[in-house]
Image (cartoon, rainbow, N blue to C red; front, side, top):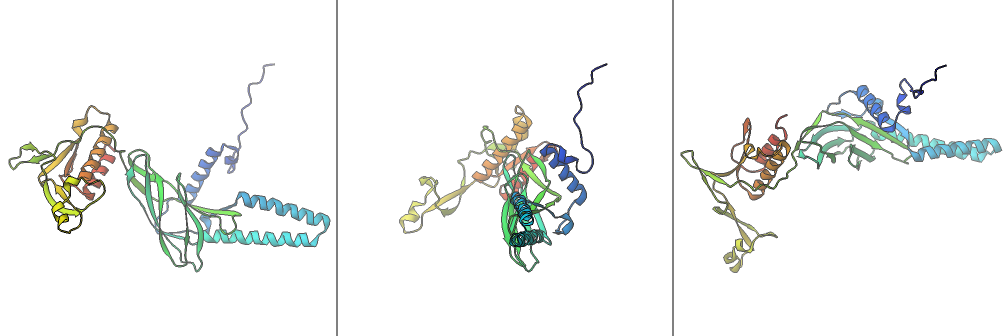
Amino acid sequence: MPLAGPRSPVRSSGPFQFLFEPRAAGLRRVLAWARARQGEDALPLTLRARRIYILPTRTGAVAAVVLFLMLLAGLNYNNSLALLLCFLLSGVALVSMYECHRTLLGLQLHAAVAEPTFSGQLGELTLQLRNDDARARRALSLRCEPCAATTLTLEPGAMQRVRLNYRARGRGRQRIERLTLATETPLGLFRAWAWVHLPLEAVIYPAPSGTRPLPVARAQAAAGTHGSHESGDEEWAWLRPFRDGDSPRSVAWKAYAHGGPLLVAHYEAPADVHRLLDFMQLLDLPLERRLSQLAHWVLDCERLGDSYVLSLPGQRLPPRHGLAQRRAALEALALYGQ
């Protein structure tokens, strides 16, 4: 008779198949099931009972075993006091389960904003929570996977802003897939949690890096020609308070000698002078390193207070500097080619 081949592993089927799978695969199946069950969330959002999950913690599981052993001992020895204590502690555990679930029930999420950040760094996610209940919601835990959780207490009738961290991956638009709101109050015997799936996207900038020198500032003449402008040809703008790291040469010593505060002269380039940050100047670099070098140049220009032009294929930003120019330039680099 032919020998039987190797037996295939027994596979379970049905809604509890995830229990027989590796932990990571089972968790993915549970998350996919919850996402399909709840659907896409929209703001403002109020947590209802059907989307709040609750299970015993490790402490709760140990307490359940102890109560079961206490029940067996009381029945075996016909000890009324042991049975009374067992039923009393069981009642306390059931009340704690109700209170744990109620901490999340009715919690309102009014706003959520994902701030942009650089690739490989932590970004900020701002949430706005409201508690319309007459009791405080204590030991609330909010988490954006896979970063650490933030714990807070919401007082009755309070509206509170909460800042979470999220891990930025590669440049471009990154979807914030899931938020977790949880609590183990009041005794830590149960953990109640809710998953929130919002249409949240964050813009991830290229990680600034590179060793290329910053392009020389140039002044545009009226006739349309370009002439070089050295970084030292700056015009005096105003006096500002002295800060650590300022050069002693820039201190207004005459004003200080007359009893004035320690001030530093601040210089700016003329309005028609800017630096050209050109994508085509870096063709010898790979694409991602090219974008990282341009991001590094943008931050250098902002640090120096220089106006700059960002030139990308099919897109060109006008010569400016400041917060709006920085954001527009880094966003253009983040979304290039996408």
